[in-house]
Image (cartoon, rainbow, N blue to C red; front, side, top):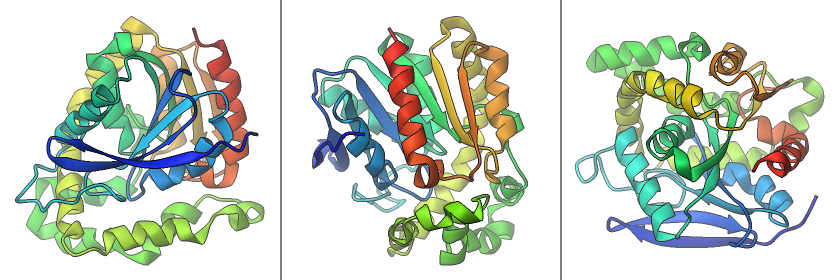
Length: 289
């Protein structure tokens, strides 16, 4: 384990401030780390510290999350297509031509759009509850997909997802008792602070509604896997009740040579198994050419 320095930077992309964390030598192989809901680049803080001696790591906050700009829903089109465009703009501005992708939750439809459009730029895929198959969906999604069909009828129920109890649950569910004390409470408190900002609820409701269109991309993502066979590392909480272990196993259909680790934890595996995941990445990336 290294103790690399993390730098906190901001770039302007399409007139919007994009906050990102950066560690390591820019001449080293790059890993682009894309977070999910309701988190930010903060979820990757341990990886930046542990891998920065060998790799160049970039972890941005999506628009509407963390310390990036948070324009209102009338000022910005909150869709996964637009979040992808902003991410592409950032990596182009930073001059990053080739990179491995680490995707979690919302980071998956963003990162896999980039990978399927520019397969020549992506050196490897690492997925932590980064879903690309219908098998990965759990009953957690029933309400969200109902909301996609009828926003007005389901909005009040969906808003419960924005509460502190639910945010804490996302971190603690599926975690064995002897690992619960590894979860930093500031992680869910920071996420909740972001959700509690005036206007953020409208942003998250819009992204929940837009998530349905990611499913249209699954055949494209899967064709990318089959055709280009990117090196794959899966580090997935086997007890995740948001994206189930079946979603991890589904990757075997199209990427049978992938490396699979189903960890005894939940959705935020880095919180409880950060050291193990760091070691897996170091070994895996050492074999990627």
